[in-house]
Image (tube, rainbow, N blue to C red):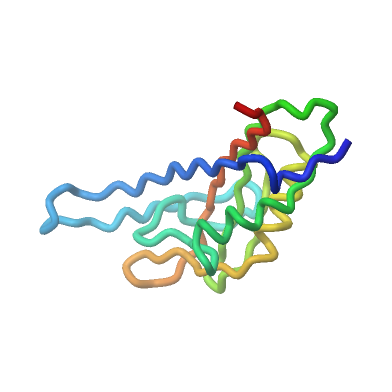
Length: 142
């Protein structure tokens, strides 16, 4: 049975912590890099300004109502963690499913790739950044 999530709740757990100093006068950019194991390119894991899709988080959330999943139980919860790189021109590359249902994860990544993205910024410069998107899809009625 295919379930369309337009009638159910989808929660986006955005846990992005960009370390900044509490003293406004001593702000240090928090731009960290690492070698991406999938693409073998140097990417940022934190930035001064995070990548964002045009329309913001509300637009992203609304896009997820298109998600369908095959499940015999209408009362369940699904946790996903997907990640992708938003490059300096806003193109999505290096997408991956880190946790959860592969078919639903692929749908999430297809939606993410269909949106326009603004790249992350470090010290005013556009940078490629690994963006992790944790999701909880909850179809339980309360």
